Amino acid sequence: MIDSRIVAMTDILVNLGERSYVVTIGSGILSKTGELVAAVSRPPAVLVVSDVVVARLYASEFLASLERSGVRGALMTIPSGERAKNLNTVRRIYSALVQHKMDRTCAIAALGGGVVGDLAGFAAATYMRGVDFYQLPTTLLAQVDASVGGKTGVDLPEGKNLVGAFHQPRRVIIDILTLKTLPARELRAGLAEVVKHGIICDKAFFEFVRDNASELIGRRDVVLHEAVKRSVEIKRDVVQQDERESGLRAILNYGHTVAHAIEAVTGYRRYRHGEAVAIGMVVEAHIAEKIGVAKESVFGPVSEAVHKLRLPARIDASYSPDALLGAIELDKKVKAGQIRMALPVRIGECDVFTVDKGAILGAIEDLREDLA
Image (cartoon, rainbow, N blue to C red; front, side, top):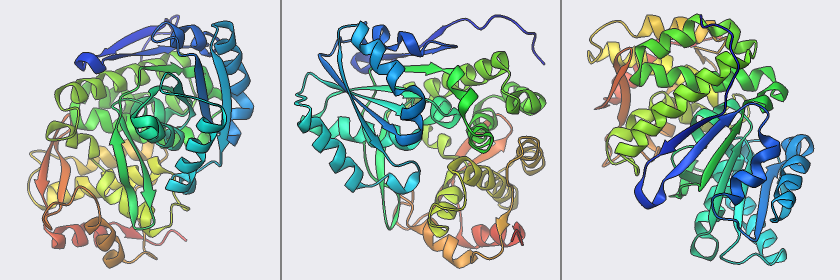
């Protein structure tokens, strides 16, 4: 446990040369976002992309802060959920930019979760060959993962994130008070990405998340601030070494190979992304032990942490292992027919391995359970 203390604003530099930016984390800083944006580039206009739920809660406050800083703001809303993450929605963003007469000096701001960030970021990467982009993540999952690193993209019917681009934000502004309005299920889903960072890079942080699970679920400010800060630091360290995922950054995909297959097979309707990642981490920890790359027990500790965070850990037996494997084979991380997976070697250390299809099918079979 950690002591209660005042939560101060924290700045974390993501050092990528000319593409460097600062991640600002604080409590109650949404009203300052206009000046934080203006301090970086002072764009004449900003298109704020948000989903309909988040926009009702926070868009007026952000737009007012832009106006106070002398920046013209316009709002465009999209439907909530993964099913909106497609090229049709991107086309709507382009149309809104044109309608509001935004040129190459304008910027796009994503106010919402990972879906909003991916869509708005991809639009920013491609509109007029690239405009400035700001991230204002309001879900825990987006704050600790999707908003940092510059990955943007959309889904195709055939699979998740198959169209995308790297486009780093100019600044990321994280107000942890927005987590107060996040549904409990969404908060728990975000905790999957938090504990993932501990599993792949930092055993002490893994233990912190596991031991403070009830405080995190209870939204204790100081614990959430520490969890977000350390997660951003870990992702920052990985991205700085491998911005475009040519090597080390692939460890951030731990749990995601199986997770993306689960999401595709279930039509992105049954599980939140973080819930699918939780299942994926348990399955992939089991694979690590089955193929002998784990140097110590990982399945037990990962399963325990997932359980404490009140996340799912088993695959519904109604979904065919062959269908899941077929979805895995369409994953963009598969190269020359070889399935490459980030697997934990021990808690706090992860590497990428080629995994035989039989081992994947075997792990899926072992962890199937009737969840109806």
